Image (cartoon, rainbow over all chains, first blue to last red; front, top):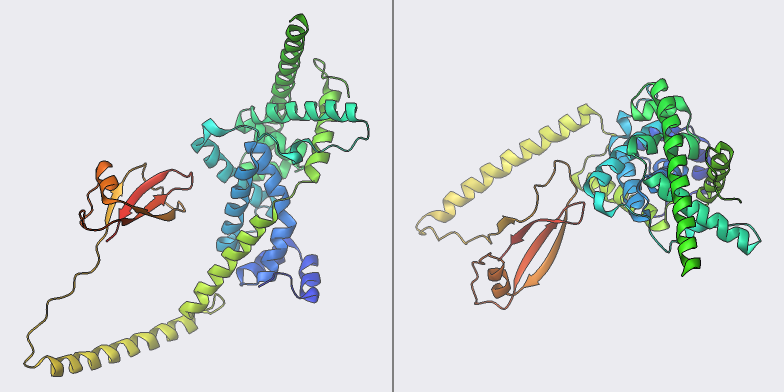
Length: 207
Length: 163
């Protein structure tokens, strides 16, 4: 069975609001559910991937999130939060559970071409950029999760402070202070990583 | 791009921008979508099999349940009568032994709501014995089917030894 097989139905649901799609999903409309997935799976995946540093873990989180949507679509209350906030809230819950269980395995996956996707034409510039981005990703994954989640949502996923506060269940002021702290921590970690790389280069030259 | 310098907010903002650009190209793999939609279809199928649509209202469900219960009662009474007629003069036969299974807990407890997977493996009784599990089939059979119950984290929670 292919979702969105009927082009007219697909066009119609593609224009529907999140709220309407959730209502139709709760009523058992497969096309609406598929449209919801298409609309939101990317942001959920990217959030989970940045949080865990693992594409595989992120895939599992996406599945968990949409299984919850499938099961509990009727429980979604648009008056309380936007659908994006609701989904981030679920994703955050599953990401935390996973991180708690697999603390030992949190590491960036090597050899993933998506990690270092570059667009510059200059290979030298590409290499430097890829190196910086890799370092940044590592530094983000190494942040404490309460800071990491705010940074990922607000700085990298363009989630509004209000939506982030709603997803994380905390006050707007808490979001601001955590974000500030997260950026400071990140700068410190990046500086350390830079220094460490310089020292390694010096040692290599000396040898 | 120059290396990051201390207290350089602009550099961090620039790096965030680069990361956002990279991230924008990333989507969940197609197989995740297939798995999610398969789960949807499986759920819908289970509703169809049970004869209840999600959109049924309470009244419909009530009447269907009532009809099913009535049919059940009629069937039970009929079977009881038929059984009495057949049992006259026939000694009761020994009930066949239902295949039994033993559950051995080997890992942490299964968390509430945790989605477990069951992996069936075939093992020699001797190997089972070496793990401290005795199969009731003893050494008479070449291999015993064992269901390994695996938690969400991939760690075995329990094994179930069937016959």
